[in-house]
Structure formats: structure tokens, C-alpha cells
Image 1 (cartoon, rainbow, N blue to C red):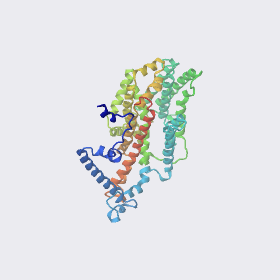
Image 2: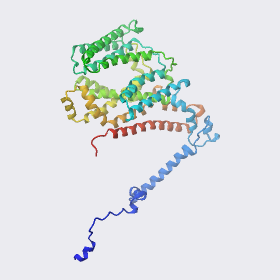
Image 3: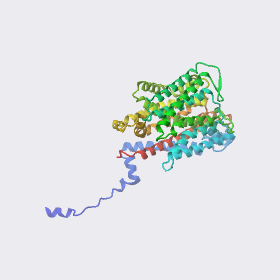
Length: 499
């Protein structure tokens, strides 16, 4: 028996044999994935035939029988030599209108300059290798919006006394929040409480001006009502008290200049917008096309993220009043369609503003869109906050961090990283929902394309389909770019839990 088996016993490691030629390469992959069973083979043949048929019809309509050049509709009709394909000549003739709307031709360089600055600043923030991230972020979020507003509108704004008081009140509120978060001061100190009371009085005075009108008082070259002037004095008093406390607490160390930043930002904002730079005024009813779409989308994105963070924190707050207000806000805006929000912002928002504070139609749409998106963003971020282990909160408390320090340095960075897909998904939905502003008379990209259908010079059977496909392709480019950058960011920040 041993003599019969011994010749077949290996005395050394045998090398593995290569797989059969029929199981590797394109042929093997195709057979394994598409023709593994008779049913798979039938489904593959049917799907392949449908794909070939659809692809051929698309190519035939978009390229073979399409018209690329022409001065009017006759080029896209059979009488003018055109076929039944796409009328790309319509896109070529209306391209500038689709990009700029009815913005004056000689001033379109302002939009071009704004886009170039946006691309440069966004690249500086988005590309990891670019240095000076903090400076780029400050320029993008703080300086760029003001410069773009002056460029696109022409500047030389006239500020009412009520608006001046409202802006100064915002500066006071931000300064109070900053100073009270300092452990050396806290919100329980008497000057901070007095400043908060003065700011609350200013807010109530501004709210009352929406219902009570009074005589006009001219002060510092601005027109005030008695209540708006009282709000200005109260806001200034709140700023003086809280700034004095902040400087005293940070004199030995800390960012003393940061205490003055909100006030400086408000003064600079008013000075820049009210200055005359010699630009021709362009009313917002002339804005349109892709430029208007970008204005609405970028404003909504930039405003909804910080508002959503504050609402999410407020909904998880231990203070019942704050938590209830945030819940009511979120559930109200999430339960109302965006179209209703736009109509309400367009017609009802001015009724809630103090006397002398008026909003342009575009600004009303921007406010409504930002508040609507912030409610959805708040729920996305709240999900990230709930996913953080309890030990992270306890560890931050053990280090004697204040609430805002804990959120800023420990909790929020982890929570935002977890919900990047949800955040970008909200951004993409917001970008596509900007097309709804057409309902209230603002001609965004889709609205401008639809207006082009009514031009007698370009009314053909294929004009609507061509214009809508062009608009869909533009939306797809922006949304797909955001999606791909989201995936890139996820991979770059995925430093733990590797599988």
C-alpha cells in the first residue's frame, strides 16, 4: 500500500494553478455578472437592447438631427433645414440671458468679478493644501458678501434709523454672548445682566415701532422715530457696559480686540454700503438667470448652517423656554411647503419689521429660503449631536470647559463630521429648490429659460425640451460637484473606525 501512495505524496510546496481563462478578464466578468443563469441572460439582453435603443434616440435627437447655429426659429424648422432634433441654436442665442438675466450689458463685469472672487475664496477654503484657511474663511464669509452686494446693486444704500438700531442691537447681542461665555465673567455678573436688560428693552422698542408710528427725529444724519432712537440708545448702552467688562477681564491676557469686533463689523458694514463708489445702481428686478440662482442658493447655504446649528443646540437645551421655542420654530417651518414660505416672506414679512425697516423682494425670498432650510438643517445636526457618546460630554465637563467651549472644541467638530452626507444633501435640495422663486416673480435660471420659450423668434416644437435639458444639465453640474466634494471630505476626515 505504501508503495502505491508514495509516488503521489508531495515533498515540497506546490504553486497555485492559475484560474481558468474563462473565469478571468472581460469574458469571465461578463459571464459571471450578466450571464450566470438563463434568467440573467434574458434580462441582460432585454436591458442591453433598451439601452442601445435609448442611447441611439438620445444621440440622434441631441447631435445627429440637432441644429447648432441659427439666428431665429426658422433654423430649427424643416423649412429652414432643421430636423426634429434639439434646437441648440436657441441656447446659443439666449446663453447670455440665461447667465445674467436682464442685468445691464455694460455692467455684467460686476457679476463676472463676483464669480471670480467666489471661486478663488472657495478654492482657498476647500483645498487642503492652500494656506491661511482662517483668513480665507473670514474673507469668504465676512468680507465677500458685502463686496458682492455693493458690486451687484451699486451700493449707496440709504439706512433708516430703525435699521441702524437693529444692526447695533445685533452687535450688542453677539458681544454679550461672547463676553458672558468667558469663565472669568459669566452671565451672572451685574454688568452683563444690565447689558442684557438694555438689549431686551431695545428689542421690544423696535418691535413696538412696527405698530406705533411717531414723529421723525434726525440724529447723526439718520431719521429716527422716538422708539427707534430709544432702541439705539439702549443698544449703545448695552455695548458700552459689556465691552467694558470684556476689556477688563481680558486685559491680562486673551483676545481683547475680539470684544470690539462685532461693533467694528457693524460700523464698517454701514459705512461700506452707504458709500458711493460711482457704480450705476441696478435694481434686483433686473437680476436673473444663473447669477440669481447662485445668489439665492449661496445665501441660503451660508445662512442655514449656522442657524441650523443654533436651533439644534437650542432643541437639546436644558432650558425649557429655549427648547420649546426651537421646537416650535423647527416644526412650523418643516410643516409648511417652500412655496407657501416664499409667498409668506414676500407679502407678510414686511408686516413684522419695525418702522423704517423695509426689505427688497429678493431679500424677502432670501430670508424665507434661509429660515426654511435652517429648520431641516437643525434636524440633521441634531442627529449628529445625539450620535456623540455621553463620555465626550462628561470628559469636556471634567475639563471644566464652559458650554460654548465644550460645543466649539469637542462636540460640534465630531457631530458635523458624522452628518456631512446629511448636510450636503440639504444643500443640494436647497440648490434645486431655488427654482421655486419663479413663483413670486424672480427669474432664476429655470425661470429665465421658461421665459425664453415665449419669444416669438424661437417658438418651435423642440425649443422647450432643449431649454429644459440645458437647465437640468446646469443644475446637475453644481449638485454633482457638491456630492463629489462631500465624498472627498468624508474620506479625508475619516480618520478612525477603519475597517
